[in-house]
Structure formats: C-alpha cells, structure tokens
Image (cartoon, rainbow, N blue to C red):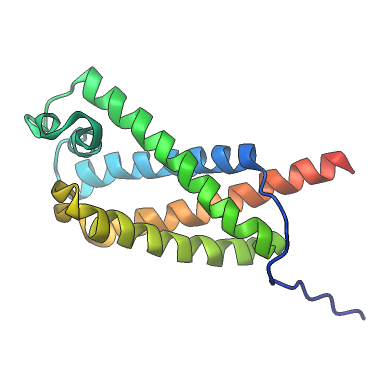
Length: 170
C-alpha cells in the first residue's frame, strides 16, 4: 500500500481566476439568501435592511434612511456590490489555495474556507467598521456563520471547478 501525502508548501501555481470568481459568486449567493432569511425569520426585521447597509457603502448614509422600504436602486446597488465583492474574495481565496495546493482534498478546502471565513468576518465586522460604522450592529453569530459558510462553499466550489477543468484537459 502506497502512502501518498500531498505537500502544502508554496510552489508557483496560478489560480483559475474564472473558477475563483464563479466560486465567489456561488458563496455570495448563499450568503445573500441567508441574510434575507436571518433578517426576516430570526431577527424579525425587514428583508431590505441588509441591502440598505450594503448599498450605503457606495451610496453613502442616505441609503440607511427608511431601511424597511424596498428601493430598486438600493437593492440593485447592494446586489451588484455584494456579488462583485464575493467574486473578488473568491479570487483572494484561490490565490491562497492554488500555490499551496490546498485543493488536494475537499476536507482541506473546507478547512481553508473556514479559516478564510473567520478572517473575512473579522475584517468585515471589526476592521471595516471604522469606515462603515453601521455594520457594528451586525456583529454576532449569524454573520459569523454566514462568513464561515461563504468561505467553505467558495473554497469547495473552487476546488470542484478547478478539478473539472483540469480533468477535461487531460
């Protein structure tokens, strides 16, 4: 029986950027659905409140007015920003996964995704609140869980897409 251990030391290996962006979009889709569910079912708040807070990052504090009201412009802005950031974060995660071969197994991808989710949560809800203070109220178990799930889903989807492309080329 041969023991095959995958080394996770750095080596020059370029990520599949398209797979990374698509994985980030998939993770972002899950998170936005969870945000809508969490705000309405758990917090008993308007489902539009998270979109107003996200849109305020580019539209300014005026987007924070009447947060329980649907506004196509605010929701559209929030969704575009949310998905762009998801794709960028997917690419950041792939830039970590690829050169260290953390895509060697689904379990390793999940662990790296969890670690990335923790870092993303701390960055989003503890560091960036210096610029966007309205996110301080979002700190807690729900957003932490959403960031953990984003990291895991994004990492695993990236690994699946990368393997599928690699297998198709061989």
